[in-house]
Amino acid sequence: MPLLCQRLPHQKYILAGGVGSGKSTELLATADKVTPHKAVIFVDLLEHFTSRIGARSALNHLQSVELIGLLGLATLRAADSALGVTPEPLRQALSAAISGLRRAADGEPAAPNVDIAKLTKGIAMLAGGIFGASLAGPAGGAAAAAAAPSVLELGLKVFEATSEAFEWKMGVRERRRTGDEEAPAQAVLAATNALLDNLRERTGREVVLVVDGLDRIAEPTTFEDLLIESSLLADLRCDLVVSLELGLVQHYGSRLSGWSCFDFTFVPVADFKRPDAANPKGLEFFVDLSHRRFEAIPSRPHPIPLEHLNRLAYLSGGRIRDFMTLVRSVATAAIIAQVPVAQDKQVNKAIEQLRRDREKGLNSLELDTLTAILQDPRRRLPPGAVAMELLTKNCLLAYPNRSTWYLPHPILMMHILTTTG
Image (cartoon, helix red, strand yellow):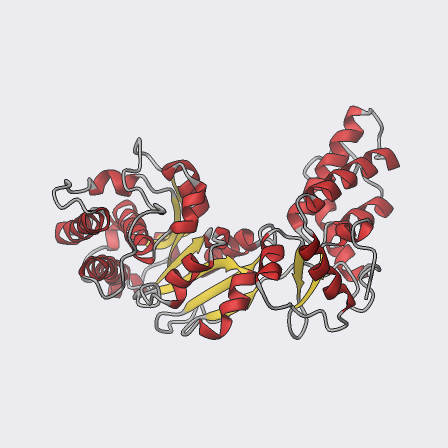
């Protein structure tokens, strides 16, 4: 996303990848790099739905207008916390819009208004690049331009959720979907855009919203509602960066109008032409990663020899999460066994556990699809829902090249897949 630091109008970016590919780390790094140039608000939807909504699965039924309202609340909280109280008409507009949306969606015209203060405090997020309260106000933009760096709140600051409960239930499966053209949706969009405009005016900076966690959405209908059938996200008057599941982005890519897509693929640890052989450059990345992690424990030498690290790196499939799971498992087993460095026994046990986890639940149709990819010298993504499901389950992995290529998780080639292309 090289242009995100530039003052270009309302850029929209998608970071597409599988779970465990390092997207969240990349999003945080991107947000941190942008803070010297723009006001940044980072929202972790997975954390919000897990800890505040109490139902991670509700993400699969999130509506576009609900997401817009949530981002409006995050913008309001960032402005209140960094710049002082937001003008009351803007607060009331968002409160009325969310209240009206709930009444219309739930069919309860007599439902009371939401408590906007509690909702705002019920969001955990990060924010940075926002000027201090001393520069707030109509002249803030001009003053900000001449301000010394010491006056700025640069870097990402954590804002914890402080209210007891988040009263707005989102992602309710049975709830009627609200169309873009309906009055409640337009009211929520208008209120959120007004808050974004106000934040821009008070800081003299463009605003970037970074939304992590949308990659956990696996339902095609929800994906379509958010990005294909709805234009609400595209209509936000700010820069927007979201993470999405790679398979769905690949499937709907030609219909993602107005979005710039970046594939965040896994590290290629297998050779393109001979997937049963390792790619040395990919292995080097993970060996270096493990050494940097263990440098934080200076009193203890690295517990895993190089030959075992290379094997773990290859069998991780280039997934950082799988690699670190293997390394932690092996290192812990070595400590329990009271050996200075891991032996074959500890390494093989960790690998066997990951192999069983990855093979679990695979059916014959999925295995046929994986085998077909192994036999395809071009390593292209097959059409259909089976390949999408395999990507979601991280049994099929995407790798970078001039164009993205695909390979079954290498650990599946230990036993259940024996044919290599």
